[in-house]
Every structure is written in structure tokens, then in C-alpha cells.
Length: 146
View 1 (cartoon, rainbow, N blue to C red):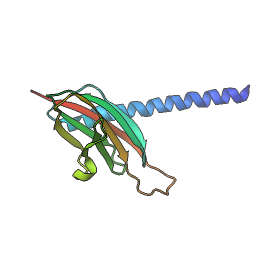
View 2: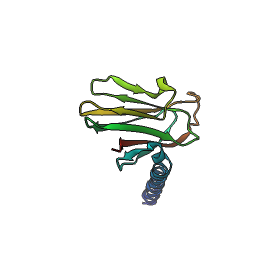
View 3: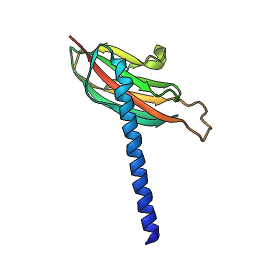
View 4: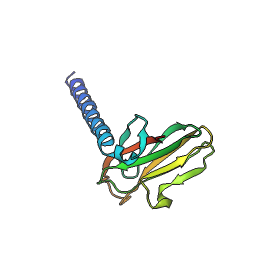
């Protein structure tokens, strides 16, 4: 019985800590990363999570024809480089930040309404290291103001 109570207490602590970290990451996206959208109108969603060296994440987003968009990827300073790709439904890479000077955003106009994938990858300083650096990574979307 005592072991179950310890497990329950540990579980509650872990849930509380992860909620706190998630809230900090959301706040970082809102107050720091949103500025990268500049003249683009933010879509209202703060897509942010904590990633570690070597981690990847993907987000699927529908883009509508005739609109001009900005996709911005932002990270905390302590993380190594973060690269992102925009991939269409046929697995064609439309943009790769690694091949574009590690650009933190991409501006584009979509000709046909379609769902695209934003694939994010945190590079690794030392793949053999057991001490991986973690931090907040955010993906924000903006629509060009008329």
C-alpha cells in the first residue's frame, strides 16, 4: 500500500512539472517567437514543445490557395541548431532551412489548398553523449496582411 502511495505521489509530481514546463514553453512562443512573424498576422495557435538534441517533431497544417504565409521556427538559445523542412502530400520537400542558411522562417504563397507537413529536427552536438540539452521549440504560422 505504501509503495502505491509513493508511486501516485511521484506520478502527480511528474504531471505537475510537465505542465509547468509546457506553460513556460507556451509563454516563450507567445512572448519571444511571435515577433518573427513581423508583418504577418498570427493564426492564433502557439505550437510549442520541449525537444532534446536529436529529437524530431512534425505538425500538419492546411494552407489555403491565394494566401501568402510565413512559417517561423524559433528555439531557446541553449539548444543547438534547429532545422525545418516543409513537405507536401507527395513527400516533395518545398523548403529546407538547412539548405537556406538555417533561415528561421519561410515566406511563400500557396497555389492550391493543401495540407503540408512542417518537420523539425534538433541537431546533436555529440551523438554519443548521454547529457542531451533540452529546450523549447516553437512553430508559428502567419498570414500576410492585406
